[in-house]
Image: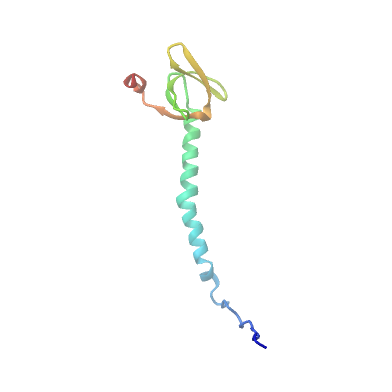
Length: 108
């Protein structure tokens, strides 16, 4: 015949390796946690704290790019005055950041 028989060798991985076989996987999980998961949860916690601390008179920037002053705070919505006598309601989650006082006056 042209094809020879292939026999499996005794053991590819030695049982003495133990934890050394899993060390690269453990290192990869640790890097993934410290570079991706931990910073993301920290940012989410800061965003949640910022949204819960919104109050009337805060100057905010929304995800859509609108800049205005908070005029009313509802349970899930915020009334943002973007111009004189122009108020829009946006979701609290759409508020991207709270700006320092006087930012809107410096923009105009």
